[in-house]
Length: 171
Image 1 (cartoon, rainbow, N blue to C red):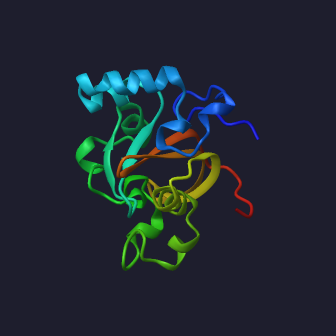
Image 2: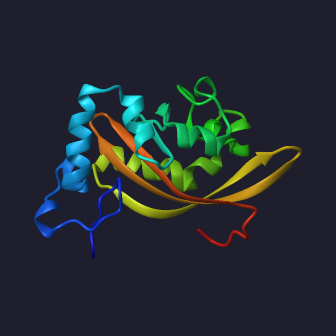
């Protein structure tokens, strides 16, 4: 299996897959990440050019970059400190108990991927995920391809693709 950088998608040399957190990131992105310590986190995340959300162990959004906010059509206050289901407008997040507490949450690929990566430290790449999203007065399925990577005490969720109104088969 070919291992790729969780930030830019380039192939990693075999020596860079030893299991450390930084092993899922290519040398170039790691250099940029380390250089970002000298600039605000938000500027670094915005510079990645793809939708990125940073989440905690319970899938609560801690921050999102500009591209993620544009994709979700939300401002930072509507995303930060909210569960991922609330941020993406999952209809099940509106049910009693909210995101993470409904029967549907047990099979939510987005939530499960974030929690799995947080728990195991294992990155996931281009995982198909589906959600029923509240759009205007109706519910529409949305298909995502997501990638996750643990960075310190947070999980970076990258939205590689998003398609609204797709036919959804078994996950």
